[in-house]
Structures are given as C-alpha cells and as structure tokens.
Image 1 (spheres, rainbow, N blue to C red):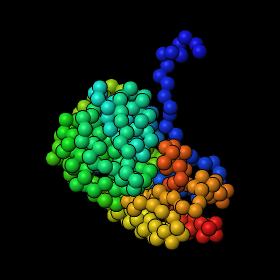
Image 2 (cartoon, helix red, strand yellow):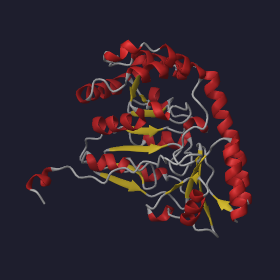
Image 3 (cartoon, rainbow, N blue to C red):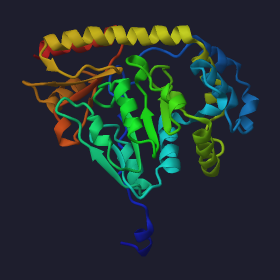
Image 4 (cartoon, one colour):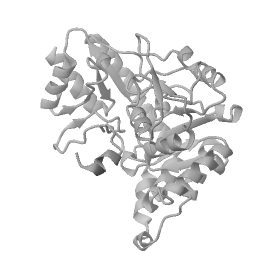
Length: 351
C-alpha cells in the first residue's frame, strides 16, 4: 500500500439499480414511473434559450422553490431543492447529524443511509424490522443523534401510520427527525403537517417517482425556516449551483400541473392493486405495499433463480443479496398495464 493511501477516505459505495443497455426490455427494477412527465415539461424544454446555458443558473432555484411552496401551501423559505433526493438527503446528513450519539434507522431500508453515515463518520445503529417487515416505533425511543426512515419504507413498500410517525417525533424532540417520503404519493398520508407542530422535522420528497422525472434529478426538503436556512448555509458552502438551468425550468411545469400528476398517480395505484391480487393467486407473498413497487417472495421458488429467468425473458426486476433476511425477495416496480400483463403471463407459465 502506498503511503498516501492511509489518508484516503475509503467507503463501501451505494449500488444503484442497473440501467441495462439491452433493447426492448421491460424495466421494472428502479421504481421509475412508466408514464411521461406532464405535457408542460416538453413545452418548457422547447422554450429554453440555448444562449442562457452559457450563464450560471439561479443558485436559489427560486422559481422552482416558489412553485413547490405554492403546491404544498408553504412559504418559500420552508423549501429546499437539490439534485435528486439523494443530494438533499446527503446535505441533511452533513448539516444535522453531527452528534457523537448514533443516528437511528431501520436495518432494512434505503441502502444509501449507511453509506452516507460511513462516509461522513456519523455513528449509527440500525433498528430491526419485525417479522412482517414493519418498523417498531418503540425502538426509536432511546437516546440518539438523529432519526431517519422512509415512509413508505424501501424496499419493503410498508407504510407507517402518521400517528406512529408523530409518536416517534414526540420521543425525539431534541434531535432532527427526517422522513424520506419518496413514495408517499402512491399511498398514505404525508407527515408534512408535522413541520408546523414540531421544529425538528424535515420531510424529503422527489420528482423521480410520482412526477416521472428521474432523469432530471430534482429532490426537495420541507421544514421550518430555521432548518432550511441551516441547510442552505451548508449547501452554499459546498456547491452554490446544485440545480442546473434546465432542471429548474422543467421542474416548474411538472409541479403546476396538479391534474396530470394526480391522474398519473391514480393509474399506477390502480395497476398496483390489480397486480397484488394476481400475484397472490399465484402464491406470492408480500406485505401490503403503498409505493409504486411490490416486495415479493414465494415459498416454492428461489427468488435469485426467478430473477435470472425473468432477465432471460427481458424482464428486469431487483434482487438484493444483502441483508441475508431479504435474499429471498424480489422488488418489482409497477409498470404499465401492458408490461405487468407480460410479467404475470410469464409467471403463470413459469409456475
């Protein structure tokens, strides 16, 4: 080992979902929305002045911040935007998780959390989900340096009731509690109301799922003005221009078209509920998902083998090797009705 290597920050990186280069596949592995963005997004793209790209973007992304504030009934100084919710969450870790006490999050959850904690030298303790893959709120009553969890959880899709979330917040009013709501639009009630009742709550959402803009990388946080100011102070100390001109311009019409947003979400939910019934008839087992994916297993099948056999048929889903207790599960994104019909047809023949 070279002498300089002892000063290198070494981490085990996050493994993103595969983006296959194979043509004509049914891609159900990374929870993207199968429908296009709102029509106004294309109109905005056509109107972008190419000459504007030689200039730096608005560092405050004010137009996008204002649109989000209006949509959620907030003040603009209660909204923070970043390059996807991953960027926003990383800024939150950097800003608020600086205690010597460990932060808490579930043992089966978004696998970026422990990566950020390791990279930023933040101590953490994972709290095991129960046998039905549900959080146990009592596990979060103990002393800690902060709390974070997704709702609905990923990769399980399980929704925690708002009353349970508030109970966790009540037991942790001396630290920051981050609720990662990447999938909340597909079921359940947002915890957004808690930011007015508690000064330590941050809600994080994204354009990548319900707004069909994963390729544009837009995420946002909502909290009280003081927390957003602290977050912006760190952001401007790290990178003043996180949001590019195109993302800001296209994000605004995506937020403003509430009718299209709600219509698209309803389509995904309708397909999800239909597919739940069909998979249960085929013997698949899963907890009730309130997200745009299902986390399934089957007593008579190897999930790793099924994953590979689906791939041979051009159907790409997600299989996790770790942790051990979810090795016999597949995460299946909800696609269009046609895509899901193809999946169900294959599974019927396969069984």
